[in-house]
Image (cartoon, rainbow, N blue to C red; front, side, top):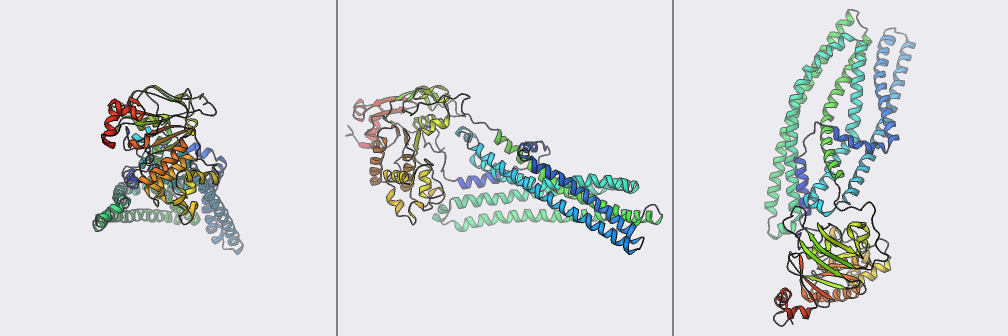
Length: 616
């Protein structure tokens, strides 16, 4: 919204959206520290409860697979003690069959756990994405005055990706390894309390160096991510303004700057890799040193008859399992913390409440809507600018079927009138009524359904020309859509497209010219067949010939409809039933063109500037 007082009403289609998104993603990556408090992840529980069957199945097979893993170590112990030790072929066959059966159970349990956990994770993320998007669609423009669109998109993409990583993989790994660690330690205490005590003493020696080196690796990882985000941000900004880059022949400079950013990101990544490699050497040395010492101590116990060879082998397997679990938990803990921070930001977005919301008991508009509009001593200032009112004591009544033009200098509050009428905002003083119903008492969707808007820069969407016209009314027939295009003087250029009405027009319809886009937007408004028509500089993007043709179409469309027209070019509003002149948020003059010119006021000055002294 480039000018909250007098600019166009549209909040979409502003230039630099791609650069803004890239920059926002860059900033979000830079602000993405790990959160030690993981309580925000509890906000995922309602999404999990929706699929309690999968959650219970995942939990069951998680426990079952952990138990089978521990049982596998017991079966391996029997292979050594009861198979090899006894030496009989029957005993060997029996123990190996038992081992194979346990391994088969483990395989089935692991596969089932993977299936249910992964499906649950994908379902939770899909539900989260839908809930986020549906909720964002309910937020009013006031929210986006204080929160950048790119930041919202970052939460819906980058942050949700972290949640996807958590629930799709990290959560399963964390739970599985937590259970394996607890089960392994408990089982080791049962198998050999003496060796278990030895491990307890070894744990601080192994983990303390890992903790300090790991912190350094994490800091270098964040730095590498930040440098890469800088490169992505610059690339997005350059590509979004590629025509400007090429027009000024700055391709080489843009490539040099991007290459420099990439090299900086590469250097940061190499430092991270070097530190990670050093940590790997340290971890493996400490871990295998500890395991070697443990086996040496256990071997002495076997020689002294304190334990069987099978028990030592089982204990070694349990120790490796526990060590592997600790390592895996260390790896995923960072993912859990990052996901916690992401969920905190997502929860902030989900908890945001629009200032414009349906009342508990909304009043129903008359059916059909007659189109009588009344502004009663309205006072309004945009959020964050209370000292600069956009409307100040604004009063206006529009009769059903009347065409009223709003004119005045930029910043007079003309577009604000339409924003309040569409109930994008509520006034701080006075009232806005439609057919006698205060808009604050009505359902916003019902109010907007009675109106059709054509803004100065009406955003279009990817899809075909027919898709964009039907965006105005989803159930419009093809005949009705073609009739709207004909009325908007759009049929000619649409039928000239390779596939006619079914031709894809590209993102934001960039394959069309400005005038073609505007005519398509007018067709979209006309197909709504709404009783109220709102035109905010609707013909500003057209050349003189097309403006004349479209103005004729709009004149026909206005017939029988209540119409509010905003225009800076006074030639487009000469035939209005009434011209209302605004200045500093209030009505200063109103009447027909000829009468206003003879009064010698603000309108007369504007007319002289555009028409010359012979305006009258």
